[in-house]
Image 1 (cartoon, one colour):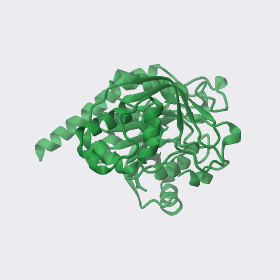
Image 2 (cartoon, rainbow over the protein chains, first blue to last red):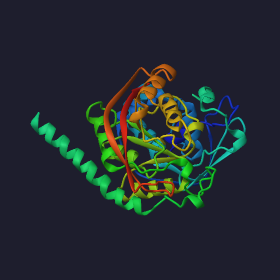
Image 3 (cartoon, rainbow over the protein chains, first blue to last red):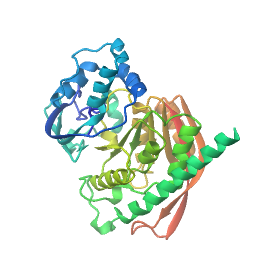
Image 4 (tube, each protein chain N blue to C red):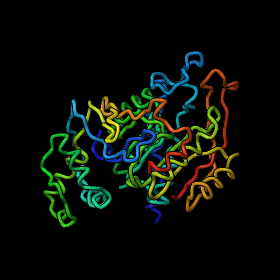
Length: 133
Length: 233
């Protein structure tokens, strides 16, 4: 599971008001190379909360990126390469995502996070999850 | 102009060919089990009749993704999510057409395993998530386009509308979906009036071949008329 995927997910348990960011519990991680696309990264940057992403990077053991980032840094190829590496090339193979409010573990196995809820964690009607977005 | 059209057509044919090729393999690894063995809960253990798992045929998948890219620029360079991805057909078609990042979400672990294998075989990247779409916890509007072939709601009524509701919350640019032609008015009304979509358009009508997959299917094969929709959130 890439960190961009982790970034998109939030805890979907009923009653949880702040379901992200999900903390990472790392048992096994790997690196897989993907093509570098500067435009994609520059488009992504304004859409994300940098601090949340940096925490995820650090959990994976990647410390090359600063705590704060401003858009002028996107002009630096070195910065973009590091951003690319952390966002798209680091994979959590085995471990878990942790709900920040309840501590509930969502296991990650073979790189796939399991976000299935138990019966008591679910809203009755899908329309009740309006607040999740 | 002629050259562009020709290369577009060959792109479309290539897409179809690839999907047909891999589709043959994914059918062999069957998740279509005997109804007697079906479990009732989405435990992720075995496929169930409840999920209405029908593979998206390559001709429908390539038509949907090709139109999304060629007519609307909704695929190449974009972040695409495939809701109820199953074996990954739509998501992989998106990757083939140049989507920058593809997420595939499905409730069933067997399907996800197949999707993972299919991605590997095609040397494509797909980011898989196991989740019930109706309980999806998602953050913000990072995804550009959602593509889906939702369960039609024959087993669980209204399942496709649940999918549409969530899709319109997640997508920032467009949602492509298939719904039975018989439900056309209902879908349009729900999308525009209840789900606040800005636009809801039927791009074309297709025929969806449903082979006899489950014991409760009486006929050997059935043709269902489906609408290919494009919604704007």
